Length: 303
Image (cartoon, rainbow, N blue to C red; front, side, top):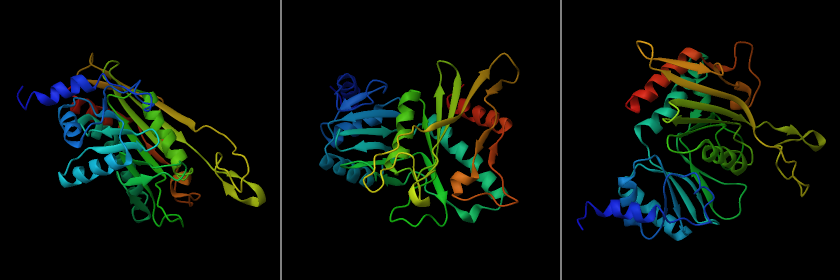
């Protein structure tokens, strides 16, 4: 067997291998069992999707993967790693995947600049975030993230905004990313945007999820699901504030895009952790913006 055929053989053999330790294998397009770094990189090289689930990754193996990734200047991201489940989810930055999240973030940044808040915002992109709420090692590299500048008075900087994209993932898997952001940050992340491209439906789906603090004892503001001084947690699910669907209409010339769900509205209060000043408003990504955004996504998909 030639060296060029080996990655395809590996993917074919390994993709059928699943393990109960990884909760995302049901919806992931490919699941492989980790054996060594070289074989994993071969599988990534021949992958045709933007998402890969890797099982049986010990903390030592994860460290080895990270070292080799940096040494070889690999561009894939660690979407999520959890040492207790030994599951590593990998983002492979395809053209469609990158367009899905970067264009939304760029539109948001245009609104920030036009409102004169550029120097008050910090882009953290795909910087590593370490869980504050889980036992063991749990960390993540998001797609597009950012937060206020200066940040909160805390030892670890967490963004207030996270955008996650998927072209081969189900919305359920993307929602697992959303839940991680809120839980792992101890609810310091306030807004999560999910952007999914579904070629079978010829649609882009955008969801906006939010979490807000609630008033605790003695006037102390605390997150809804946070345990304070040993008191039981107040359990509350993240809130789906918006669901937007964008479909392509090939019956028109030129091709047009239909947006249902209205403009995407991002609340300044949650993103900047303060009330808007008299000349400030929420950030609105208009229907026209979303139509242009969709056209870019479809171009990257070759449609």
